[in-house]
Image 1 (cartoon, one colour):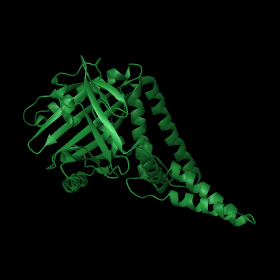
Image 2: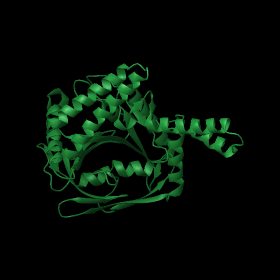
Image 3: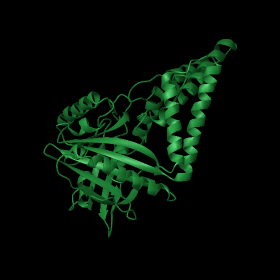
Image 4: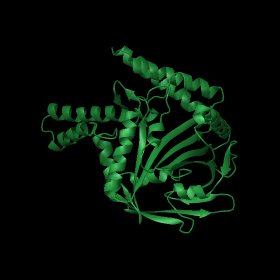
Length: 355
């Protein structure tokens, strides 16, 4: 939503004095338990162990997760079934997808020749999609919009999914069959069973790995953020999901974010901490976002997934390495999704079932 300041860190990754909120809670609780064990006579060693475990749980590991968060992910992974079913059913005006959630969407394909960025059609297309989001924000319950670029070594196709009561912008032709292609289904077989592993998914014919873009802040200005990911010499699907927040709720969220960040800055300064440039930039970005929402623009929850498919585990490993290398070159950080592959796979499907 910001062309002047640029994209920043996700709201869920907001930090207070350099740490995330749950880390601060865990560290304070752990220090309190360890301090109580040292001061109070005849304290139980169980109190010391719990305090030390909480302090260890605040340590960061991988994918931006802490030890505590990764432990929760591992427990959920162990507790759920390894098998999941993804099914699609053609209806009169839409396709119904069932994957840890049920959603009915219509699919539209973008037909174009050559590079749209050279003649400015990419900017016009983005503005058309922004107008669709602004219109959805005025409806109660908002809506979901997803754009998928389905690339193979020889071609690329672009899919737009909308609910059945929303009209597409100009330049998009209805093509529900492309929904099945992006979802990895066939017209003759409308369902597939997936076996979840810690790092990937396995179906009857292929293995799949889902990555999520977690940070755009290092991407250089003036370049398409996801261009290099689409240029990888492997079959990938880049899915952009926009969950449109209802306008009244969006105004509350924008105002609350500005108030929270400003209050945290005031507390930090009163405690003797210097206000960093990153914090000032974040507050400026939130102020701009509040202004845009107040002027009628839509507030979006954005998620970007990269789905890699291969015929074997070794081929998948090489393809993922190629995609990760492209992401590093573009200044984009991709998260591996360890222990959450089936959840991310359902989230990245057209229409975002399970959101």
